[in-house]
Length: 259
Image 1 (cartoon, one colour):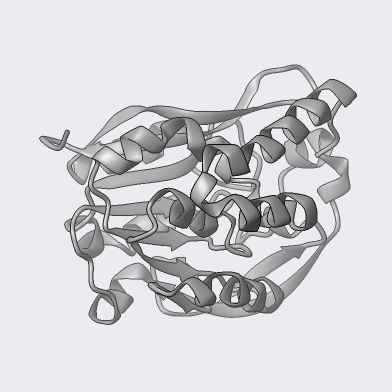
Image 2 (image 1 turned 60 degrees about the vertical axis):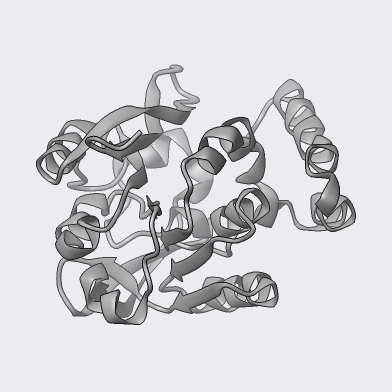
């Protein structure tokens, strides 16, 4: 997304401060900050919350919407002993995800989109890959971020997260992260059994419709409350470049009675 000079300067400072905040990973992080910011861009966002993530005792991370491994890489930097399971449907992203995360071990990837049924699904692959979704882009998204307007409809595998329960070992505590560009409710509906073993859930939620027919925060909140979770705040927000209103947030939910 286009940024002002001041925001780019701030972001640059965040990237180059990372090696000093993770001294045991100083040289690898310095190299990634110089050469692969797409991979490390989630780490500055999660770093302010690393004390919370560590004390939560998270041993398993399910990464729904793995992209090229940005979230998984950040989690590994903070929780190096955690087992990570990532799900990503796009060929190019999947190959990069596997390349980025496999060398560190404790990682398994599945090439599929997640939803509430098993089969295949039409998928809108965007030139700005992180904006790709099962759902078609809405008018507000196009107006706010015109550089993401080009997309191609393809077909990708679709599965329920519950279909993979026998292929994952969910040692507690388990964190489920969902970043699927408006398709969050379908992922949750396909994860009823998995959710019973999840302690912490971090999901992208929208307050305005960026994808056609997507559920907004209220629906996701109600669904997760029924599943036994409580809303515990947001770790990050995205503002509209059109008027400064809140478009999205990364909402944290915690199982009731946990922490």
